[in-house]
Image (cartoon, rainbow, N blue to C red; front, side):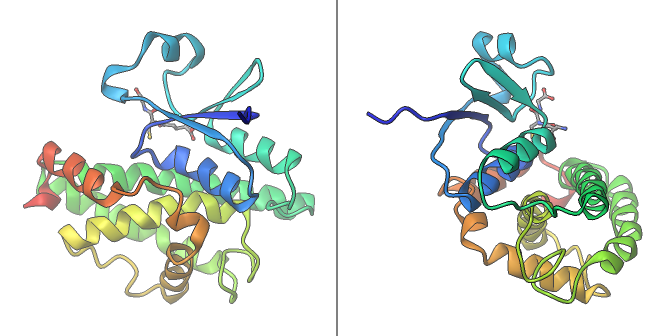
Length: 218
Ligand SMILES: N[C@@H](CCC(=O)N[C@@H](CS)C(=O)NCC(=O)O)C(=O)O
């Protein structure tokens, strides 16, 4: 029996956990994944998760939380380096990871709100952020270049959800942003991204969104 060094506590639909799964897959590191139901958090989880959120990464007796922190730790101890080594470029990438988290939060409201006006408001807010992002993206396949990096792991879950949302309700987000569109296509075609969710992810995601009965399901 192999004893895995890492245990990742997950919820099947969580985009933040997915960032760490992509990182582990990119590094070809073996890990155990334990799924919980966030609507019914187990006591053992509440004991170890100070924020009551996933992801949580167990590394022997140490509990890590916050996807950006988990990813940086995994990156430091498992080759190859996915974060840029140059401190200023690394800080720049960290800032854009945070920007991606903000876009995820806006898109979450778009996917769940029942109110058409709020949906439109959030869609416009989302689009208003895109010129900043477009300007940062390389001419290569990914954010920094043709080389995949940690910042890419944090946008792939967002693009995956936007793609599924777009099938329910046309979003027309990237029409004027060819670099973002190209980056999204390249990320969604990458094996580590495709393999970072459960097999029935699309079905689970659609069920989850439909159950919330939001505007995009109409
Ligand atoms: N900033 C956190 C966000 C994590 C987060 O929001 N996780 C959600 C699921 S996607 C969660 O566990 N929510 C449970 C709750 O808030 O009760 C990170 O990057 O890890």
